Length: 384
Ligand code: SF4
Image (tube, rainbow, N blue to C red):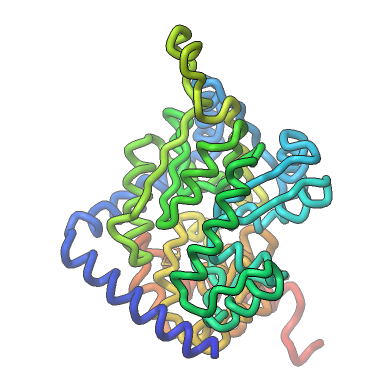
């Protein structure tokens, strides 16, 4: 079933990517430039982290650097507290640190609002794709879940299911106390967070609740807001969603500059803006001669669409949320070679991923490096 669903989705996405690239020739130029921009940041990561923190504070927000996943959970848990309604925008970094489960343990009502992630949540399942997390489920599977878990019976028409989910979540957005999203990019010069999406749920999560929190790996930092916007365009194009339906820029809490105006019409957006930057192995990877390439990844997942291993075994190649060729690299960065090793040995080294990566990452070489280190650490399989 996975192979069938994946083939249909990936063939369509690859067609859309090719179309966008042939129609808008500037995209490839932007991607080439972004590689250089991201290399500059990786070479000077501490400097750019400091700049991003200062910029967030300059626009009235609060910024934090979490050394690991546990610290990230604690920081966000303190901001959120308990007894709140929390709406989450799609974030692999939030999944990486186990944020939803942590906030639920603190006594909060927490909802994923990306349709795919919402389906995965109500199914008590794990994502099978970094951008399309419910790719492993058919429309029939989703209809069954909606009926059993939510009491929603609208048949298996995808549009009807999406509308039903939208209505369910609209009520959650309306009473949400806190919105949390990831980030496609963070601009060091302005402290602005940029998100690209096609559902509009991130827009609601960043604007409706009185408190907005963005969680982002430190590698998401780019020098300027212009770089961040360009990165959002490139990420969307190389995932097959160009032009992107929505691009959000969030910089600081809702403006209260005009007091007279605010008295008449209170500010509608969030009163608090927090940015939690997550290290969790990224700064160490920046110093590793091979693994640092992984930090150039913008998570467009074009590599996954052409990978024969991922096509054959899906989320068994990696570990959710980090699956597919890019996922194996991200597992090594965030959880170490021991965690990524079992997946790295499944790589066939076909090389298709390298051919299509907009950041020019030699993915097979990075995975071969992980494989070598893994064998060195745990010993060759015949010795075990
Ligand atoms: S490794 Fe390259 S192709 Fe794969 S997700 Fe990252 S940037 Fe995209």
